[in-house]
Image (cartoon, rainbow over the protein chains, first blue to last red):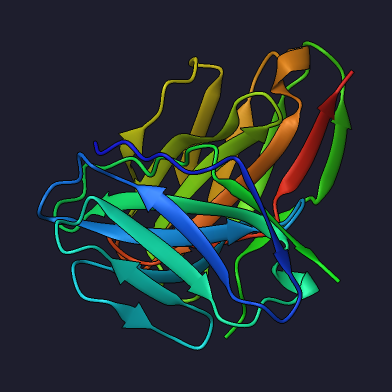
Length: 112
Length: 113
């Protein structure tokens, strides 16, 4: 399983873009990069995922480097409700024998 | 579509007792997985069930067990509770497994005294 490295915490001003990095240098070619977040004491929430192309949805954008060794989650206009722990997780795209492994994640604090 | 529901939301037990937690997945989802979250260890995978069969298992002692019913609802049981079992227990469901988006429930917070 690919290992990930994320900064333990980051701050962002409300209304500004939040850029959350993730290093996954050992990711294999058939592992997607998934991002989840967990607001305090709630269940994790899916944000976005990608394989090698950049992706965008209503919540965020995901930028994956060409060598796939790192990615950046972008929240374009952060709000106070975006304060949460953000997890970057490589997930194998095929087969059912898999365990979802959450690391420590990044605590994003959005300040007014 | 209704989300993942977990019952009860809060529970207080004493050491040595056993506890059963319930998870109702999103309609049509056949994969249900369970996680334990503690401040020290973070989110840890317990096990996954698919079509009433345990398909994956994390590194937890045999005191932790689960099952899944034909309607995909799942239960998790912890026997001989220890103080260290105090945690937030989360379940997640998906159509067929980890290669898809997981939808998490709100969790059951268990306190063992």
